[in-house]
Length: 131
Image 1 (cartoon, rainbow, N blue to C red):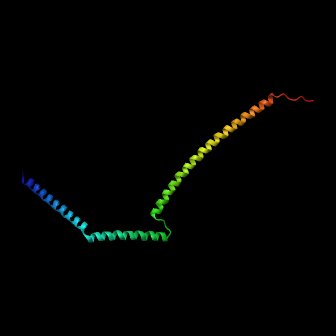
Image 2: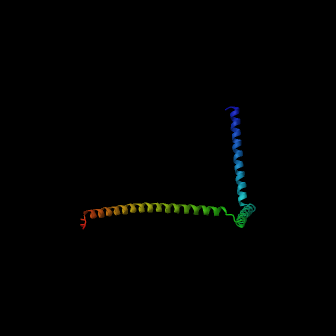
Image 3: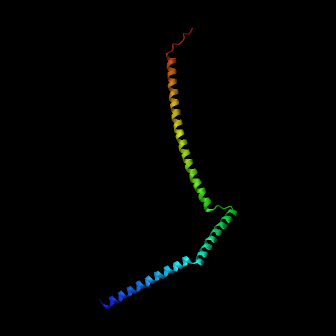
């Protein structure tokens, strides 16, 4: 093994040791932060402030008569639902129009057939003698 190889191996070992110590230190710091009542209280306060900010935003938007994102989403869902129902009604109406057209054609054919029979009966009757 050459001197360069030994130095490279030594450097790798030293880097691995530094990496392991760094990971251990970061883990300990993270654990200390998780267990810290101060950090816990700060996070709770931040979430509380977030909730209050959301409530204030909703109150301001309501006072200005502006819809919230939730209001817009609910309206969008209702419009989609209404649109689907309207399409169903349109399809049913189209089907009813097709059936009505079919019935009208059948009725017209039956009337034409009756008219033809009536004309044939009149043609077969002897005409009364004039005079």
